[in-house]
Amino acid sequence: MSYRAAVITCSDRAAADVYEDRSGRVLRDGLAALGFDVSDPVVLPDEAEQISFAIGQAIDEGARIVLTTGGTGIGPRDVTVEATAPLLSYQVPGVAEAVRAAGLAVTPLSCLSRGLAGVVESGPQRAFVFNAPGSRGGARDALAVLGPILTHIVEQLDGADHDLTPS
Image (cartoon, rainbow, N blue to C red; front, side):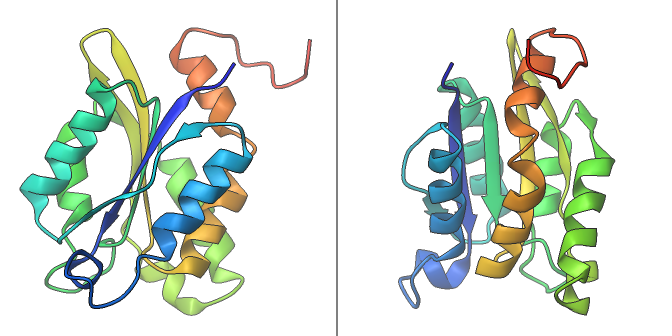
């Protein structure tokens, strides 16, 4: 079964066409390679209201997985975490910790990411949301951790058991 996914790039500079959105493309291409139905990334400035709205809209349009990229650091315009947190029904902190740990093997800057992982419940719709870092490397690190578990996450959201072994 193919599940719908969405990618949202949160970057003032990419939104203003100062530079090309590369981390969003990494996430989109990675999700597509995993078999998800995913469109081109939505590119937004670092504005919490716009980011929150885009996450909610993606879920309302059927996305079961929403990956954001950018805005997870400690800079004054890094607001993706604050935009995401109020939407989450609950967090899945182990996923965010695993992504940060994978990144630490490459760069000490990984520990500066404040990205969240969690579940949004919007009416009958349930979706997993993850805030990936805004670099290509951070996006690749996120996919390395998320890739093997994303389908299982959606199945769990739909009530499947915890067995990861194929039937």
